[in-house]
Each structure stands twice: as structure tokens, then as C-alpha cells.
Length: 309
Image 1 (cartoon, rainbow, N blue to C red):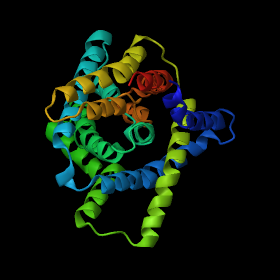
Image 2: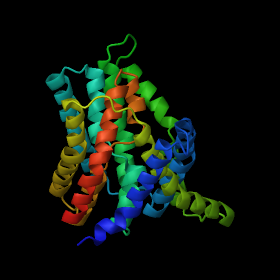
Image 3: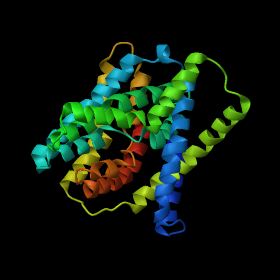
Image 4: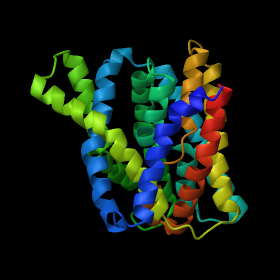
């Protein structure tokens, strides 16, 4: 019965290793931005491109799954934003960002390693589909909504959309996604030196990524412990996976195992740069506290979910 949990143990040990290294100052916290840049700018596009290459070209994507996963996330985003705004009086722009925290998982640095253990045969295509849903739909919608709701001069819908699209064009995730799709579409093998370099980066990336996530959580400021933090954590760890499972299960042609795998990805805590994105609207401390609480509780909730399925 405990075999699934034991298979995930290395992932949590790497998270603890990163947290311990930062807490003991074996690696100074000042080094985290450098680890972040390497993980985000170098490792992230390589991981995404490699998975997309193995998942096939656009004709092999399950667009119904992508639409269903994105719709589920948008439902959670809207519900979360309304609860934050009306239930706790949080300004609309920041409420939208908290909704994004509830509806956008750490798909690359946590979801992929966990799914690689649980669903090795499906992981690449599921990962590619979810990356498309999150990065081309959910996160841009949340960012545009937060900019429009901020009420700043010159931050109307059109201006916010243009700015968000400009940021997307420079996103390492989108660069990796497009690169993987181009290579898969051309169906031409990479030269051996390049492919070996890609394989080395892909092999090293989970170690660095999990170490970085653990260190980021250990270094995050945990100053708010009130109801909003708990609601964000419950929205991310409970509401998001349940809504994802519900929506995907209702769609024709989506196998139960695929819907469950989508739920597992949705059950991951929010991504590590969530506080950075929230800082623009004055939510750095709330987002940082939510990140810590959600990641800590996520170790329990994901473990319980794995035992159940």
C-alpha cells in the first residue's frame, strides 16, 4: 500500500534538501535568484521542448482535454477571485492574482516529476497539453484581468492584452513549447551532440528544479496566517483538482485514467514565482505565505491523493 508513497519519496527528499541548504545557509539565500534564472531560462524550455517533442505535433494533441483543463482552471480562477474580493475585501486586481494562484499549478517543477513516477507512459503528452492550457489561456487571462481591474490609467483591456502577449513572446515556456512543436513537426532527428546536451540538461533539471522549489519555500516570508491564506491553499489543493476531475470526466472521449492524471497535475501547489507576479498589486506577503502553506500542505494532500488513486 505504501509503495506509491515510497516512489515519490525522492521528490520530497530533494525538496527538503533545498530547504535545508537554504535554512542552514550552506547555500546563501542570495543565490536563489541565480538558481531561479538558470532553472527558468535554461532548464524550463529544455524540459518543455523535450516533452513536446515526444508528445508529437499539433495534430496529435487532444484539444478537447486542453479545453477542458483550461475551462476547469478558469472556473476555479473566477470562484477564487470572487471569494477573495467579496469574502475578504481584497482589491480586484490582487483577487485575480490570488485566483490565479488557486488555478495554476507548478506543472513543470513538481507536476512533471510526480506524474513521471505515476503515469510514465502518458506523462509527456499530458504535460504538453497542460502546458498549452495554462500558459496560453489560464495565466494570460489572470494577468490581463488583474491589469484591467487595477484601474490604472492606460491599463484597459486592449493595452493589458498587448502587454501580456508581449511578455508571452519572451516566456521561456513558450520558447520551449514552440521549439518542441517545430522539431516534432519537421520530424527530423537532432544531431547527436545537441541531443546529448538536451538529454543531460533534462536529466539534471529535476534535481535543480526541486532543490530550487524547496529553497524558495524555505526562504519565503510567512507573515500572514489568516483565513485568506487557508482559503487559497484549499482552493489550490482541493477545489482545483476536484473541478478538473469533474470537467474532464464529463467530456466525451476522455478516458477515466486521463481525467485522473489531469487531476493529479491540478493537485500540485502553485508555481514558485507566484509571489513575484503578485507583488505588482501589493500581494507579495499574502502570496508568499500562501505559497509556503500550500506547498507544506501539498506534501500531505498529494500523498493522500496518490494512495487513493
